[in-house]
Structure formats: C-alpha cells, structure tokens
Length: 151
Ligand code: IDP
Ligand code: MG
Image (cartoon, rainbow, N blue to C red; front, side, top):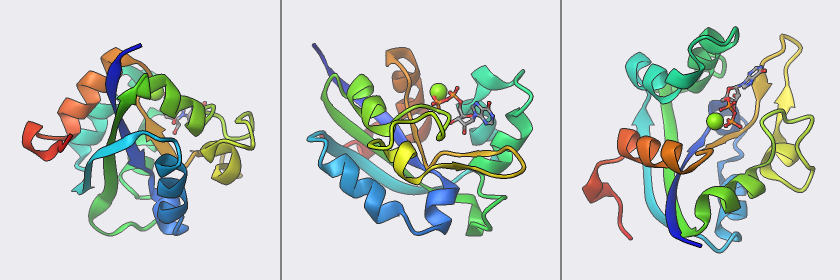
C-alpha cells in the first residue's frame, strides 16, 4: 500500500461526445482525490513524448493524431489533464478505467461504458490513465509543473 499520484487524460472522443462530466463523475466516486486539473494544448512534441514507448507500434501515427484531437475536430488540440491521488491510486484508477480495447473492457468500467472501435479500427477509449508507477511518475512530470499539483 502506498499513496500514489496518477495521470488521467480525458481523450478527444470523450470531449467531442460531451462525456467529460460523466467520466469525472466516475472518477469522483472512486474515492480518490483530484489534485491537478488543466486544459492543455497538446503539441506534436508532447504527444510523441507521452506515447514514446509505443513509437514502433503500427497504430502510433494515428494515436498521435487521436490524442491531439485531429479525428474529433477539437479546437487548438486541447485536452483535459487530471491528476488523482490516493492509496494505490494507479491500479485503483486503472480498474475503474478498464481494458485498453473497449470491446474487451468490462461494461462497468469507463471504457466499457463509453468506448468504441471505429469502422476504421481506431480505438476510441475515452480516457488515458497511467499504467504503472514508473509511467505515472514520468507522465505527471511531463504534463504538470510541481506548483500545479495541489494536494
Ligand atoms: P492503455 O491506454 O490501456 O495504457 P496502451 O497499450 O498504453 O494502452 O496504448 C495506449 C493507447 O494506444 C490506447 O489507450 C489506445 O488509444 C491506443 N491503442 C493501443 N493498442 C491499440 C490497438 O491495438 N489499436 C488501436 N489503438 C491502440
Ligand atoms: Mg499505457
């Protein structure tokens, strides 16, 4: 057991479909505490850094377009970035978020409730959540300055 911080991004499909409130409602009911929240203009550079571990995947270039809102006409590539904190927050939030593939995600989870796969094969899975402690530390640092975390 440890107090952890984890990064969440409300992805552009959720923004476009006006699911932000529903997703935050689920997060709030998890019992974890919101300690960071801001709209970020996702530059090409930030997107590539965030997903650098996936750069050799066949879906990588579309993933960069997706997270920058290019498939969903999001103005200025904006995204809502959040940090939640609490005991075992990384795995706890991932459980709530569900599996990467929205068709495999438990229907009780955020991705299972709201995610879909487009006919072009793009996963639209609503939300990003850090996968493990190493990713969480790196991602919180990448998206937030220390003074933007209010714990
Ligand atoms: P995660 O978001 O559940 O941690 P990762 O494997 O880290 O999953 O992949 C990051 C993101 O890349 C996923 O959330 C999804 O948007 C996209 N992605 C992962 N695997 C696929 C795939 O097989 N096809 C299309 N998109 C994928
Ligand atoms: Mg991941």
